[in-house]
Image (cartoon, rainbow, N blue to C red):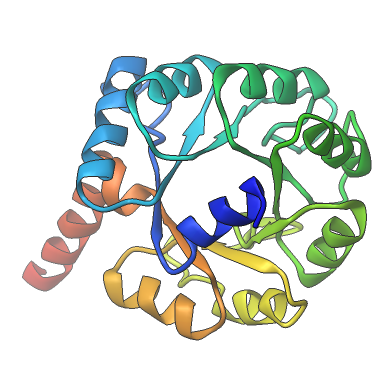
Length: 229
C-alpha cells in the first residue's frame, strides 16, 4: 500500500477539523490557529484543514496530523476563492500540506482546474476537489483528483442560507462515483456528522461548530432569544 493510500486509510471513518477563525476576528492569529489544531488533535481528530501558507507551516511544525491546506483569495475577475493559483499550490506544498484542496467548480477562474490538479499530482500530494454539484465531482475525477468534498454546496452556483442543513444528497451522489468522499459544509452536530458516514462519506470535516466561537455563540443566542420571545 502506497503512502497516499495509507493516508486515506488513516482518515477513513474519522473527523477532520477545520481550524479557520472568523477573518479579522480576535482569534484570527497563526498562534491561535496552531493551538486550535493541537486541541483538535488531542480531541481525536485524524486530520486538519488549514488556511494560508503561514498557518500551514506553523501547524505542520507543531502537529503530527495530516493537513489539508488551502489558500483563500478574493480575486477581482473570478468568484473562485479556494486555492485558485499555481503559486498557492507550490507554497502549500513547501509549507507541509499533505492534501491540497481547491475550488473544483466550473466557473470563471484564472487557472483551469485540470492545471490545478496536475500541479498537485506533480508534487506527489493528494488533490481534494471542493465540489458544489455532482458534475464538479465527475470532472475532478477525470482530471485526476483523488478526494471529492461537498465543501461548496450552497456556496457556488446557487447560494443557500447559512442555517441550511448539510447536503447529504450530494454526499451520496459523490459516493456513488466510487470516490473517496469527505463531507464538509454546515455540519453542526455529532448526529449530522454520523449521518454523513451513513450516506457514504469516508470522512467528515467540521469547522465552525468547533473553531468559530462567534458562530456557535450566535446559534445559541438566537435559540435563546426565540424561546424567550
